[in-house]
Amino acid sequence: MPGSWAIILCPDFIGRITKPKKIIGITGTNGKTTVANMLEDILTQNNIPFFCNRSGSNVNTGIASALIANSNLLGHPKQDLAVLELDERSAPKLYPYLQPDILICTNIFRDSCKRNAHAEFILSILNQEIPKGTKLVLNGDDPLCSSICPENDRVYFSIDHLDTDKTVCENIVNDAPICPNCSGPLTHDVVRYHHIGRVHCTRCGYCSPEADYLATDIDLSAMTMTVKSGETQSTYSLPNSSTINIYNTLAVISGLLEFGLTPEQIRVPLQTLHISETRYMETETPNGKKIILHLAKAQNPIACSRAFENVRNAPGRKSVLLLLDDRHDAMHTVESKAWLYDTDFEFLNDDSIVQLILVGARHYDTYLRALLADIPENRITHMRNERDAVSALDAHADTIFILYEIHSISLSEEIRQSILDSAWAKGEKPAGD
Image 1 (cartoon, helix red, strand yellow):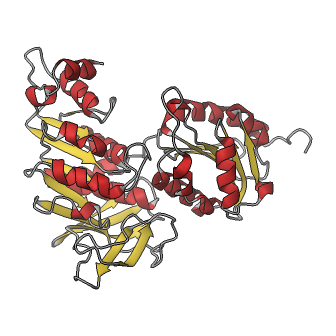
Image 2 (cartoon, helix red, strand yellow):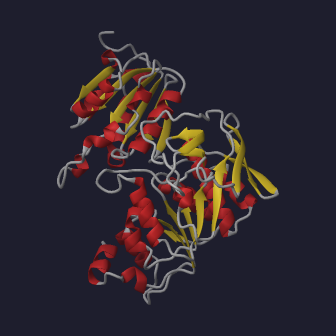
Image 3 (cartoon, rainbow, N blue to C red):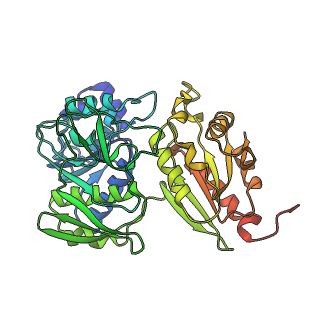
């Protein structure tokens, strides 16, 4: 509310209010909030004062509110450092008035059909709007991200090797099929997911940049990785084993090292950090089974596909409950369902996934998409009422995955609690079994 009124009364308000001496920005399609939260937690544990927009939005009104809330009566900032999550689509309303000293970019993908369904559209906005004096910390394994603002000072972070590396993309979507330099066909030497990996162009010689911060020796049993920078290297803890969160952790380390923290100042806090429970939470039931809440970000085919692949790769027999709907949009618009067909539902067609439960107002849309992914019909249950899903759980599943969108956090928690109270979680024999 404060930021909204400030911009209504004064459209260039962000440019007029006094900014802190240093600003660290975090942008990109996926991972912004996770990276920002981890970075802020590490600064807090090092007793470095700052303010952020963690409890607000990442568009211009949210940034304005954060600046207002952290200024004194004379309009001067209370802290010398701000850490700001910055929506990439809002760049024209932010960067003309606010120049980050360091800007971390996690990746560039297509997103909601309404806002930024074309990755090159977002790339063109960032190229036009990012200030020339901003130092960039870029994902060197993303051909789109690494090509942002070539005239700016920059460093790249990259992952050296993963046991899951492929040479062929399994995903429906590849947002970088052509060379960003000459528009010739790109050869993908290493594929992690979608267009993330290492590439080269045989026409002009373009290739993925050399990393300034390279993650090596990734040990998922010990949950550690080594980061090499020049002649130095340090080992850090990993808060999560998924590939995208390895990249997120590496982005945090790279950004904070560029800011001036020592490896020790980063290493110690990382040992106790976890991914935010609004993104991922695991609960063990009284009978030793698991309930996992996993953000899937409806209307975002890349984030959903990452969640689906994480479910497929998890051990044991799994039931999957999808809370993907557009009810929060219903008062103003109806979201196109085209994003479902960019999303890799095929990852849920796996023998380890014994049940797929589709709920909500759009359950017939997701049911159709699941059938087109050749998921056996006898594994699929779909219904209108989300709360009825608990009674439909397969008693033989070892783990329940609840995949939910950002607007369904409270509903997902309510369903998790209902599952904890159910016969499935207590190890009791279900009625009629």
